[in-house]
Length: 517
Image (cartoon, rainbow, N blue to C red):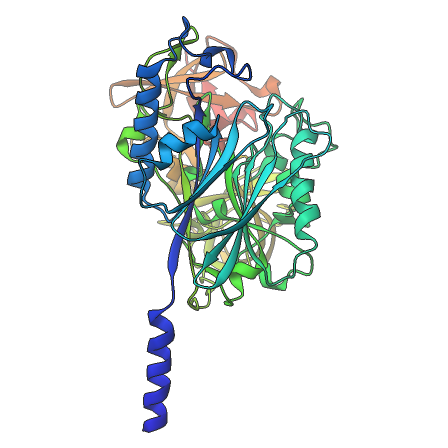
């Protein structure tokens, strides 16, 4: 009895001194002071026709302060602040942050900063050799309940520069961390100007001057053997890898920035094995998020600092949204692998940590290379290649070994048929009736749609849904299969795909549609 009491007291003692704390990253978008240093961007030279003056400066400052106060996190890494003087105006209005640091090179236009409620032990600037952008990486060590946490605050070159420039920044971090002990806790964060799936999004881009090598995915190893590093497998990885917290969110929710309406993830948080080993500091599972209150969103767009014709309009916040994750010095519960029994559950995953089995599967569409399968009263999913053995009028039990996302489209890339039996189920009853359901919704990804008529105009299918004019891109790998511009067609059975968060109708054969007189 006494022993049990002592154990309970010891547990409560340790628990009472454990700390949960949240780390955030926020690119404030070009916060310049009112002193002319000759390193400013042209539109931020103070007191000129660009309208960057005391009034606009004060509005921008107050808007930054509002976001930081409402965000209310323990440690906040900041990017795109011009000077210590500008940063001082921020810190003087945030007394809750006892510790802070700002650094940049004298010849740089903008610098890096960090606010902390915890003691900053030391800092270091990591030089990036041969970079065309004169910015360092700010490494800050912080004392969290007598545990050391290192934060690498980054602002990598923008997409105006080729990928080799971002690789230099990734390599500078890799060269530093390779000398750290495996149990050192650190976070790589900031504006990396790289999507979590950069290897997919830049593959055919003019930025690709590195033979498909990316800084975020291949130098910092957020993928291994062409798969994302998994939260369930990270401790068993033999080499130094990093888990990207964007993978904690469903695909449609992954964005901190918009480029021409497309979701982007330039702001990242990358975690090493040590933050999952239940020693010292650990990541709190599923705590990653995006800070997006209503006032940061305007007309479904990020409410950035507004300019027109290079003149400041004295309103707006930043073109980036803050991201954050929570960590703890207490032991975290073991991350359990969720059982998957429905296709719909696959859409919340990125990698399978073990093979899963799905029952009551029906083939509803097939070509020589692709297939669409579906569960009754559930969702459909796309299979790429090796579909010869799938037949209509059968009910399958299949084992899925591998799934992946390609530009937002979820697909099965490795599977085995375990059982099959004849079925009287008419595959057409599993089609999505587009006259009833809104095919623009992301929850209908990979469905086979039917019963919708419209007109082709400039690569878009224009149609009416519930008395509202709508349009959706229509695409085919073989352009000869597409209906001609100006033609009116009815969709008989076509694949509803997604590309970079936007829906599109994919045509595989001319029988997918019929012309309407």
